[in-house]
Image 1 (cartoon, rainbow, N blue to C red):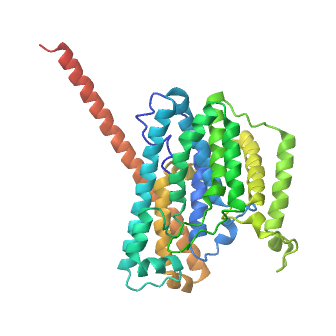
Image 2: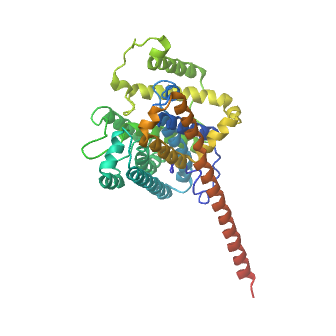
Image 3: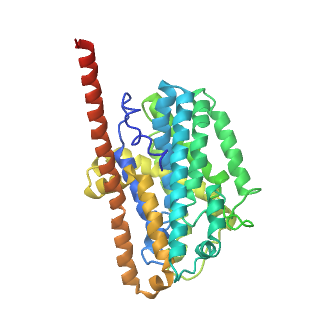
Length: 399
């Protein structure tokens, strides 16, 4: 998302501070985008291998956490060097960019649905757009109606507004207040304000429970800020902790995929739904994410530099560096499949896998175009600065 890519955008404004890129983080973010694209495309066989592969963990959780972590590093540097007002200004710019992107996606979806006179989708949300396009569009401008699979953008609008206040309190040494409020909101999201929030009257507030999912962002922002402020990670590099987290992750993996592992078409250990609800980022999902994230962190400390040299990861890192553009393209590709859902489902599984591969490969197109755009604008900016310096010299030493 735009505020997540703060280390990429507005490079000229941040040029006086050196923020080294973490290519492995970019690659992980790119991998999350690929997985989300595959998971969103309707009923494709590849989804069996990508949806919650490692347990009660989805790609969206990893994407939001990494986004928070990168935001904590980049905006944390601004907080330390320029203060809270500068963070607030940049965060509002991020909010504007994300909001305008959401409006663009919403408008394109509404126009596409209206232009398709032979709507063959069975998706209820798209049928609602076809029947009430003006109402959907007007509510969408207020973020009160969110097309399917794009509801992460309105959530990021709220998150980017939260970031300056989170960083301000953390910088003042009040991280305890931050986590108490965040945990309180998470608990509210588990009981009093539980999802689903879709189809609440005339509103469609999306799939994600904002009160619950903000916990991932807060943790990520805190860890990113601490890394920037301290110059090193304060997360312990402990083999015992690694073994404990790996063990818990394996147990949760076996519970999540018990039918596949046991080879039986029955559930051996039934877990209550309120503990594993993805929309509300429930308790077992929090536990699974924390233990899996630490396991991945411990491994990355040992082989991370080697992994960065892998060709596939370099391609994934390119997606991660342009995550907003790639995510928007992914949404539009998904809508294309949804609008022709009956024809899509009429194809053989092998054909659907082929189209999924085409969709994934196409993700590099917006990344390449945006990188070309940024390079062009950077060259223009350098030329303008060179001309300005030359004019200043002429003025200073002129007749």
